[in-house]
Length: 242
Image (cartoon, rainbow, N blue to C red; front, side):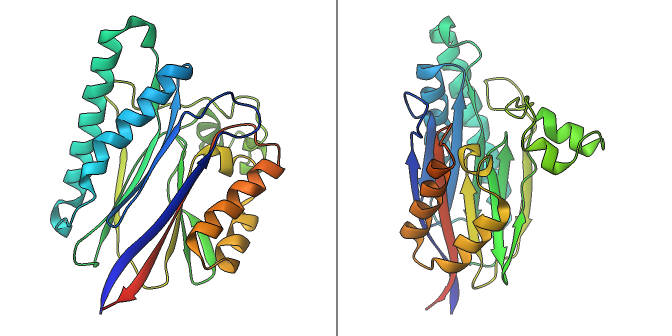
């Protein structure tokens, strides 16, 4: 038996925004979420560029080059965003978050790349753990002990991102992990994580086995909470299959 990744994803404009600047990839080997910023057209473009740059990684990849593959994808996204800004100066300041998970062809390892405030959560053995750390101003305050995590959720500057893909040099976070059968990953934009509590996320991940329905349920909860931002959700299950 070999571990396999099975995924489903969906996105919603929300109830306030006039368009959707999020983008996603939900594949067999790769899942990713990007949340664009910097004005409507530019935000759309930045997130689409990021997902377009990493989407070709959705192939069988040896475990020893997983991180290098993600690094190359992010470098390509950076170069394409830089080029897009050079082509139209009105795009100056556009950028995007990116959180991506790449599964090895052997099923023995996965790699995670992260920049910005989209998130990756791992639901394992009934426990939900946030794997990524937000690149945000309020996370810096939490790290310094100046505010609590609960206070961060309602802080007026919680949307201030300290790092994103904007065409210049950035320092993404990379990690590798050993997957287990039964693991469930949630990748999402902050349109979900800012308005739905972690304990509620865990309840839905535990109670809704079907991936598409689970993703839709989470988006519905964000909409019920006011849907102030675009909402993107990818659910990826690690399964033991022949």
